[in-house]
View: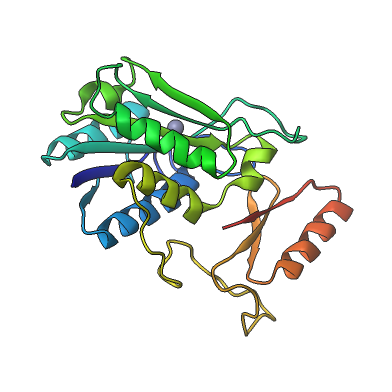
Length: 245
Ligand SMILES: [Zn+2]
């Protein structure tokens, strides 16, 4: 297949970046996007990254994304976002979950959208299903069949704790292609940083435990070190969670 993939919004820290909660939409959407692209390429597909990294406004970002998408002849446009609005900061034990938008019921992207919803739901997220929206710019203006994936909610503690960048990407790829890429250790999109005093990674080399308050405070290869920082933050009055990726 020939596929356009992009992450929504500007990068974090720039104007018109995405939603922020336990995790940051712009950052996570880019991590998922990079992993999706790498897996699709491993499976032999031609993929174009249409992400905008320096838009001057929300309208400019959307315009640049669509211009990039329409410069290629593809069978599918994939837009990766994270949702917000759940406001479940305490964690009620239930995820708010995933949903995928297509332009209308007759969209050729609908089958892909359904499969993406199902694959993400397999990870444990609530399946909010495929939704139709004729006003979303990316769905309205792209030439190829398009879907906009809201992976999960940034402001639901349960979603953030269940979220795992590589698993999310694998589910999306499964939804697009009907099969999963063989994941190669060390070839993930995750940046594995070794914390001071952690010269030899003795943890699971593919798993990274990130401790976050709202902004990320540290990333560790060893889960106990992440738990240590979490405990320190809690003692200092911060409510922190660990996100494995
Ligand atoms: Zn978004």
